[in-house]
Each structure stands twice: as C-alpha cells, then as structure tokens.
Length: 179
Image (cartoon, rainbow, N blue to C red; front, top):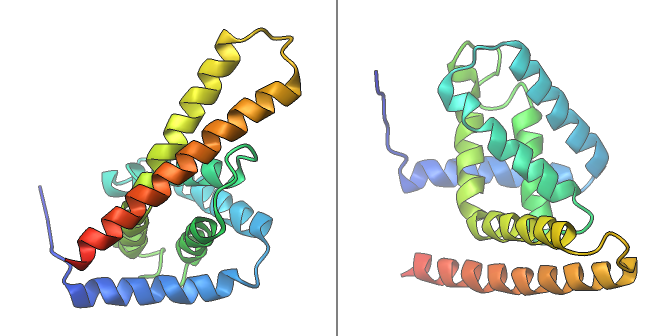
C-alpha cells in the first residue's frame, strides 16, 4: 500500500520553525549529550524491530550525520554542525509534534525533519562521503610508516577542497531556490 501526501510551503515553514526552535535549544546544550541522546533513541527504535520502512530507511542517514559530526578529521563547519545538532534535538524529543509512542505515525514528523535536513545538507553529505573515500584510499595505498604530519597535511588539504566545493554547491542551490 502506498500513501503519499504533499507538503505545502506553509507546511514546510511549520517544520522549519520547529527545527529553528530546536536550534535555539542547541545553543545551550552540550554536543556530547545530544549525540548520546540520539544514540539512545536509535537504540530504543531498534529494540522495536521490525520497524516500518519509512523509519528504517532513515536510520543510516542519522548514523551518517552522527559520524560526520563526530569525525575529528572532517571538522564539520559550525553552521552545518548546528543544523545537525538541532535535527538530533528534535528527533530525540519524545514529545515533539507527534508523540513518538503513537504506533507507526509517532515518528512521522521526525522523518519529515530528517528528510528536510538531508536535502539541506545534500552537498555536505556528498563531500563527506568523498572525504571518507579519499581517507580510506590514502590509508590503504600509502606506506604504514608514513609520517603522521604528512598524512594529516594531505587529509587536511583534501578536506579544505571538499569544504570549498560544498560551500559553492550549497550557495548555487540556495540561489536557484530563490528563482
């Protein structure tokens, strides 16, 4: 069975406002506490398997966001970091728009927030995937005895290139959205 619905601009503004309220909460919260809370929520969700597909399909996305946030080599820029943390705060709140204990639909609002964030951070996620691939390939192909300073320098250089690329693409996306 397929059920679909369309979110209007008004609906999207509503969800973005909810996310903005979460961003306000993030400013005072400890990052490690937020990551622990989202990890606990994921663990709780997994205990309720089998999961509806609309939730199960978003879990890898959340796990990628966690890795991106906690990867010291990646150094996620502050504005994107705040967006990810706000998403986690919203997702971890059991009393958000639709209380999470309502079977099946309790996570519907959370899924919408995750989907919005995934779209907003599309270029960031793509750059991070490229970064991880580069780092893995670099470590696989270089001598294990390589000077750690050289390794860090090469990885930093690639990260900077990818950060520039994601900023360019995100700016282009924002500009085209205005039209």
